[in-house]
Amino acid sequence: MTTNPQVAAGVRDLSIELPSWAFGNSGTRFKVFAQKGVPRDPYEKIADAAQVHRFTGVAPSVALHIPWDRVDDYGDLAKHAADVGVRIGVINSNVFQDDDYMLGSVTHPDPRIRRKATDHLLDCVDVMDATGSRDLKLWFSDGTNYPGQDDIAARQDRLAEALAEVYARLGDDQRFLLEYKLFEPAFYTMDVPDWGTAYAHCIALGPKAQVVIDTGHHAPGTNIEFIVAVLLRAGKLGGFDFNSRFYADDDLMAGAADPFQLFRIMWEVRRGGGLDPSIGVAFMLDQCHNIEPKIAGQIRSVMNVQEATAKALLVDTDALAGAQAAGDVLAANAVLMDAYATDVRPLLGEIRTDMGLDPDPVAAYHRSGYYERVCEERVGGTQAGWGA
Ligand code: RM4
Ligand code: MN
Image (cartoon, rainbow, N blue to C red; front, side, top):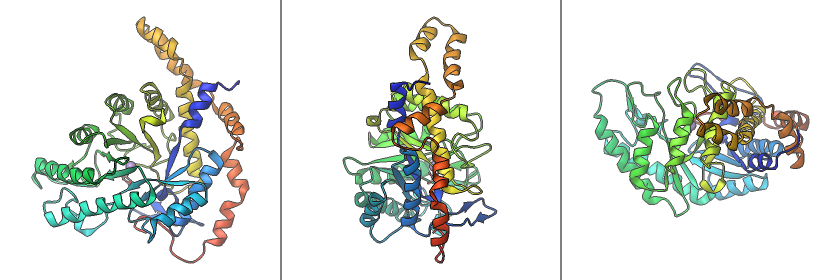
């Protein structure tokens, strides 16, 4: 296959951000499995993330989760990231792991608890100032379990009030990304259950408030690429938390469960101009590797996103526009399917070789001996995990 320069440039321009929590121990509500060599602090998580970038060349940033990644000196952590060849990306807030938040955080009926939650969000902006991060990601576990438990509309008012306060605190070059989720942990109402609710809050605030799509946070059968198209058109698509799901919020490797869906999403991103870095769409992974090795699992996920993107870039847009204008349903569909059916792995291998990388990042990582080394070095201390 001869490398198509447009595809090569598009693939190289796509940066994929890694979640620090992917490198810590994780599990389900039944069991968290401890794996060998797992980082014990944010410095070691960043070192692991740097390996993913070293072998893929397209994962130059790591998202932090506060307080899981709390350190005394965030400037020093940012320096460490630069020393190992990456940078700190999105700051994720966490108002879902404190007894005070049983009935909600920023939507809680008690103003004292709302204050505490909002203060945490403001503290996260302080962290962003220290790390040089552009984005704050807001995900709220808030909601109710029973009809009548709380006033649905009043909770929206409380949410709007907290969001407005955070918005006002953002610097000129900072944004927040509001994430929605259909259900869980709340089962009757979530306070931000869907893109429409997130969009309504973001529209009320202004351009620094954007919606983030976590691909695992929808009802089965939801047409996520439609949401992509609508949000991009409205200038409100702040980014993605990629992962894949078979059932609910499975947090499996992006592109593993449904690579065709990932292709359809990336096609809509391309079509709407969202691959242009200046548009500001943040492409992030939000995953856990409960049973598979974590660094190799992240490399695999990055490659899956790249494959979907390369296929989206292969779509023959002239042929598609012609077929659509002619009302030729089958020809239009065939244009997309031809791109999807292309094996882009040789092309991606060539692009990596051109970038000075091994064409097979997983094999190169395994050969590097990094995993064996950290398994030997990381003895003692407490492995990172949810809550660490
Ligand atoms: C949530 C949400 C957030 C992520 C946490 C770990 O379900 O997806 O983005 O920060 O999980
Ligand atoms: Mn997420």
